Image: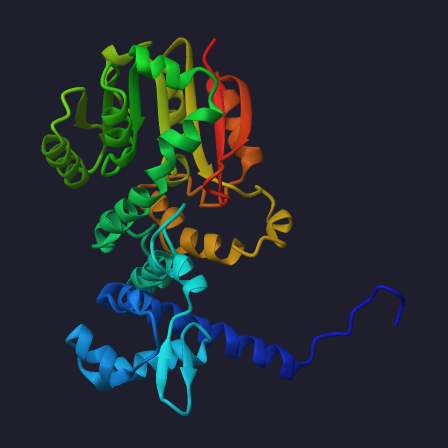
Length: 361
């Protein structure tokens, strides 16, 4: 063989790789069960190894189910197992990866999305047929808003301390008092966080889902926030009198899901004041598949796209950009919408996302 060439993969090697892949799918579902039942959180609090009986008794659960779940976790090398003592232990260095504590939630959260994706597998498969449905509606994902809200609860803990400092002068402007729009806000976690920190500024959060807007309104009332309102609007047709009315507009992981992203970006451009700024946070990646081949998270992100982001867009007859539409296409579309000085910035607390900061002339 020539220098630099690798040995061709054998059928047996590929088969083993596929066994590992399918096994990982069941491990993901197991992690989702552990997160949902509280077993992972319970193991995370344990200071010493425990038997399956002890773990089950503490959790008030059936020992047989707990023991089989622990077997999945142990053979996946997530939980350590002592053969002599028949005890299980979750090492502390693994806790932060499994338990929600940082950017984009945790592997517990993402494994729960695998569970939700499994629920719509047949629906997505039907969409492949030429005479099948265009896509899958949001209503097919009964837990999606709660899942996304949980992700944002943890991600936006560092919104003020780490994200805002990457935008020169914005924190000072918020302290003085400006008007801010969080478009496609979901449960409004970012809006609520900013409104609480900057009482002199006024905030508007919008989403097309009545359910999430109602949740955000109730949460705002609980927190006693007088400087924030939440309204139901479709991003392709925002209120006519909002032209040139916001000093700062934010969208977070929203644009790639849109049926008509070009119109949405033009609407956002219309609403930003001349001289104002727009932050578009989206998934870090490239528009060309080959450029994502070295990204270890690429199968996860393309999978999320196939089972949710792309198909919900196509359901509405949309473009179906997909999760990894890529920063090259994103920058192009922002410029075509009218934005200038488009900068692609890192997000210190979120390595899988990228921040496009733009100006309106």
